[in-house]
Length: 404
Image (cartoon, rainbow, N blue to C red; front, side, top):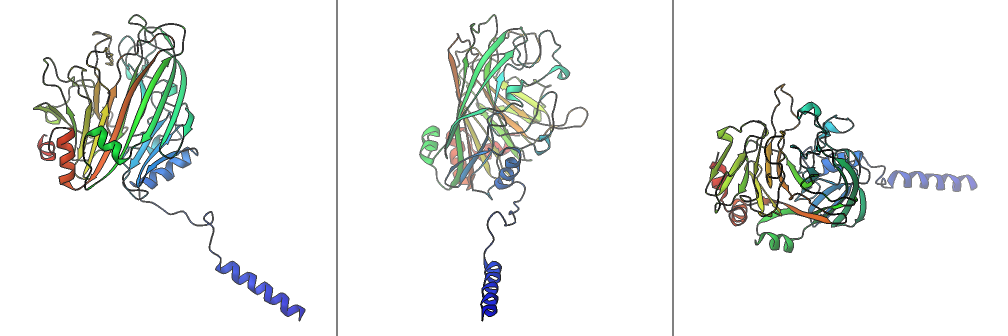
């Protein structure tokens, strides 16, 4: 009887083990398709165990403190939705002497990049690629998370930098990143959302002079520089409305050599720039010509992207060109970049960028400069996207598609 009882208990335990469901830790991880949000989230979590994911309904945004407070990517449609930022998978686990280009659809940098107040060239160094180096606090060093919840995160970094003019800067940088709900999206863009899926986030970026000396026109000053990196397509066009009620040059189109005429054009107060990742070129628009909005339209994937940012036409913007000629206190407020092969055939991307820049931070000790920059992605019916484009960018999707 005792043996029968032992056999029965043992058999029951064996059957229970066979029938018990596997715990999540035992389950084989689901494989997501490359190009999906979850693929990028899975990849990035292997690089940064403290990865932060903000969420509003089905929209999500990935932020990394380890990787310089970047917004790496976002989606309108949950885990299996399309990833909307550019992630450079090959850059992780390596060190680059000039820039560790991990990607990220919204990253915090400081300018100016060139001219006599450059933060990217040592004093007296020739302004060539061999001597160009991104400062470590915005290139490789982690930031600190001050606070975080499901919809926002605040991060900071203290740094000491030297510019080309041999001036020292003690800086406290702070970034507050918040995913936006429908009401805030409609309020900021003055639109009514209909028949579209959307993900949007706002970044509030500040730098404080925590040193003992003022930043002046003699010492030079930093500026806040926001850069958005997105995947290109054969039919992606950058769209930048500009002010027509003033005279003078609309855009600087020769940062890295003159952009070919078939890749950039102006028409009725709108600049169009081809963003296919196949021809390297950068342009800029000065603060008098700039408005506070820019965007892009990917006709293949039906993605309308809008960026909204601060512009002050009366403020001083810094010259960022890689040369010592020209006034260092005259520069652009908006930039756009299309990646392409270098002379040796190598290429970092492909990707394209929409960028906004703050005025020069001429700050006394204890003073702060703040620059806001928001990103919106819309995916939906053509009619709905067209209505948003006409309302915010002032141009129809048809005009965008036929501009170049």
